[in-house]
Image 1 (cartoon, each protein chain N blue to C red):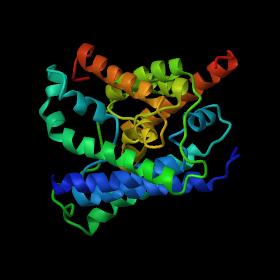
Image 2 (cartoon, rainbow over the protein chains, first blue to last red):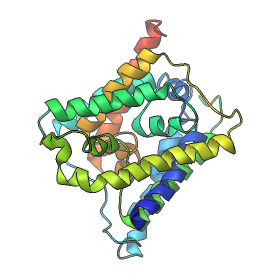
Image 3 (cartoon, rainbow over the protein chains, first blue to last red):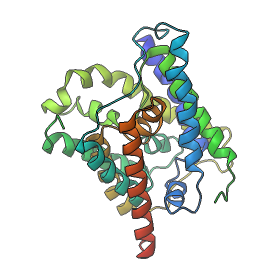
Image 4 (cartoon, each protein chain N blue to C red):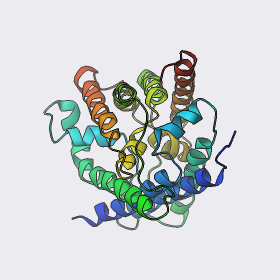
Length: 137
Length: 152
């Protein structure tokens, strides 16, 4: 087992704990946000992005490279038509089901067995994208 | 606006951010989630899209991240969770249809709530900002339409 994977697993435990703590593992709470009944989700994404902002933009000023190797590179990408079409399709599915990839995976750990259906169909969706859409843009 | 208060959301978000940050500081990797579907499919599908060298190189740590997420949620369920285990009451057809669109859409968009919403925004990526505005907008419209039509 690579040290890198153990580090990812450890950070993933915090990630999953936070998703469950914030209620994101419950599709009902996500749907109540999207119906604008409970705006708390803004603070989940905002709080997480804020902390991560320091890791990505400030920490590299004091460290040359990641502790276990690799390089510091912000997550930037080129805007294409597919970025927006995909986001629109994702948003529609999010509004139907109240699940996103991370919350659905973590939800398994709360004993939420029906989410297996959602995850199975996410795999199917990801497969269809690879099967029928050309790579590139 | 905040029937359950702000604290669980903000504290949960900070814990998520700490997890993502630790991974970044130790490894330089962005702990984002939706690529997991694509890299995991590389074990099962011979299609060039899945056999891409980058996917093969990432699939082991993305599986480790997935196992971490599940472990963290189990830890919460058996420690701080006020009500123990949780089983959703959302209809199966909604999980299925929604899941299909989430899987397809996030992979077409190259990111989800964590990829664009956390790591992308934290990287000050304008691409991710546009993606977040788009999926938030469509999510809000869809949830309202279903409510308006009385769909359960």
